[in-house]
Image 1 (cartoon, rainbow, N blue to C red):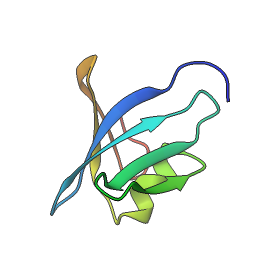
Image 2 (cartoon, one colour):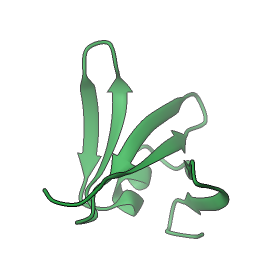
Image 3 (cartoon, rainbow, N blue to C red):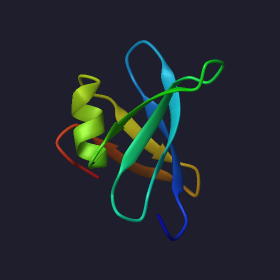
Length: 72
């Protein structure tokens, strides 16, 4: 994988997960940092759908949110 990943926070109804989006679109969320457990999906929208909804907060753009279905 080349390029820089873009960190985000995934806000779910019961928890907040840190994660990143790779330049190729792969999205990864850290489910359990202590044990290094992660979940990944081919796109950020797929990752959000896999968790049953939620929204994304980008550290560099606090007002840019993506919700299930790809709304920004």
